[in-house]
Image 1 (cartoon, rainbow, N blue to C red):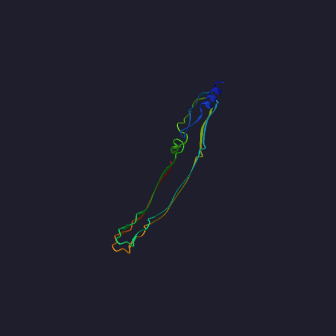
Image 2: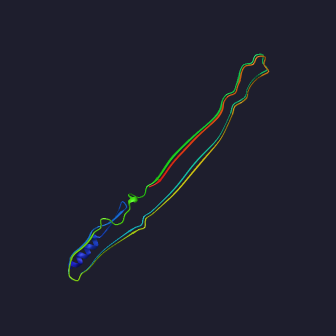
Image 3: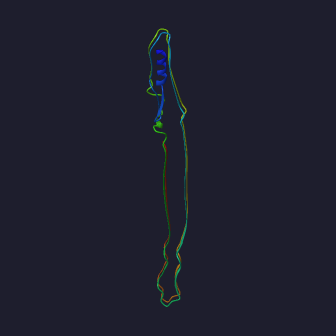
Length: 194
């Protein structure tokens, strides 16, 4: 009866626990069994962890701008003043900042097999058969798929109008304005699969 109680206690003590990615089995002890005893401690640990991260990042910037300055004309006057057209400008600024981070289960980068395990078979009787066995299976799989697409399209047009001073007895100055385009685009992506 005492021998059976020890075996039942050993089977009960040997448990499995999964905590923060580390698998550990508790201590198993078999002591003081009688002659001809058959004593066995078996520990089996199996991990099936599957992590799949799919990140799709798409940034599209499309700018289609046009600016035109009108014509300025001074003509057919006895005394003509100055002719000046205004400035034609385009300005486009785009900023995109994106951070994607995939973190595996706690302590996932340090996954290890059974740790802190111990088994003890002590003071068994003559002719006893004693064995300790342990097995560990790790079927962990991590799959990361990152797709980053950046498209920047800028079509700009700026035209300054004509400044004309003509057919005047006394004419002023003719000044055309500036025509300019400005495009500033900044994309920052930080994709991290830890």
